[in-house]
Length: 358
Image (cartoon, rainbow, N blue to C red; front, side, top):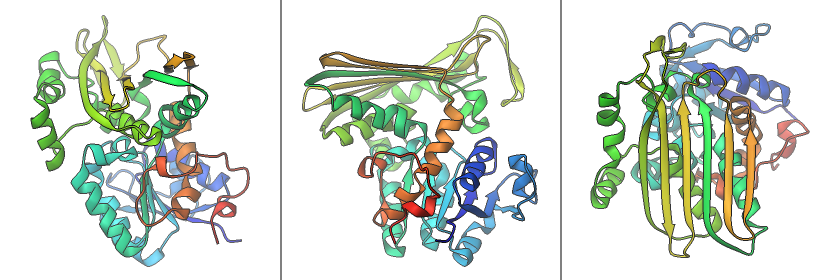
C-alpha cells in the first residue's frame, strides 16, 4: 500500500494539528497553500513545530495549477467559516479533480444557506470525478453524537443543544464572524440585523447566496436530514456576549473594552413536519478567566436523554475529525456530499490508505 498524498490549503492555527495528524496517520503532505505573505515560503515543518518536511507553503494563487499537476488524493481546507469565502479553493479542487474536505462551518450542510454555490460546486465536482464535503467538530459533537442518542429513544418531541467555544483558538476569521471586538451598535448593524427580516426576505437572501448563517443553521439542517425530518421553518437570532471587564484578544490584536461584544450567542430554531423541534445554540466568544468549552444536548421524549461534555478540546477534535474523514471523502461518489450521507466517523487505528476502497 502507498501513503495517501494530501494537500493543505490554509496554514494557520488549525493546520498545525491537521498536518501533524496526517503524518501520524500514515499519510503525507505534498503541497501547502496560503494567502498570508508571512507564511508563504516557509517549510511546513516550521508551522508544525518539527523538522523540515521539504514542502514549502506556496501562494494560494498557485493552487489550481499545482493541484492539477500533483493530483493529491485529497486537499484539506482550513481557512474561512462561510462557503462563499471558500469558493476559490473549493472550485480549484473541483476543477482539478481533487477531493476536498473543509472545516468551514457552513460546509457541513450548505444547501440550506448557499444552495446556488453548493449546486455549482456539486456540478463541477461530478464532471471531474471528485468529492467535496465539510466536516469538523460539529460532524461528531453536534451531529453523529445526537443522532446516535436519538436511535436509543422511543419518541422525541424536542432536541435542544448548547455549545460554547473560545474564538481565540480558531483565528481571526472566526473571531470576526462572531462580532468579537465590535461595539454594540456595530454588532446590531453588522451581525444581528441580518436576522430581523421577514421569512420571504430570508429565503430570497438564501437563494442569492447573501444570507449569513450562524453555525447552528447548517447543523440543524444536517440533523433534520440525518433523522429523516422535513423542515417547515427555521429561524435564527444572534445576540452579543459581553464582559464586565476588558479582555485581551491575541487573535484580534486588541484589548476589548468592557461592555463591547466579546462574541455572540446564536440560537437556531427548526420546526419540522413530524412535530420535532430542534433548538440549538452556539456561543463563540473571547473567554474571560475561568471559562471553558462545553457541549450540552438534551433530547426530550420517551425517555428524556442528556449528554454533557465539559472542556472538550475543540481544536484538536476538529482536526482529528477532519483527518479521520479522509477515507470517507475518497470513498464517496463524486459531487458535493454531506457527511450525513457517509458512515459515522470512525477512529483510524491503521494508516489512512488501509480504509480506502481499492
